[in-house]
Image (cartoon, rainbow, N blue to C red):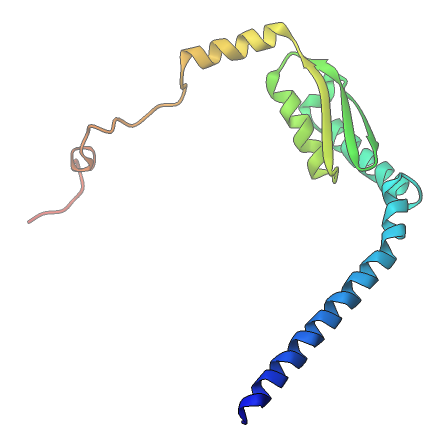
Length: 151
């Protein structure tokens, strides 16, 4: 290949990339008004909000946190929680429930009672409740007994 041919090939390649990028940009701006209508809460968005809200309410009815009487409303794909609870973990469960039902974001206004906060704080003060393996013991001293190996 002659020395100047390489430059021509590279130039044609770069021009084709530039044209492709401009075409992609032009097609994305043509789609912008359609997505703006969905974001504004009209048309298909209202339908999906109702679907997300009904999915959350169905999950809430099956869950233990349903007894807390939380209220949920979905608007623009965002789930809004209201209510109060005596269990700290129920607030986080409500957020996870909305996310798994399809909400793109969650505004959690659930209030946790002072008694629940004090109980959680006391549980943290007492430390871990699970049994822990002592790291000072060697593995052989824990597994030697009855291993059945002989020399």
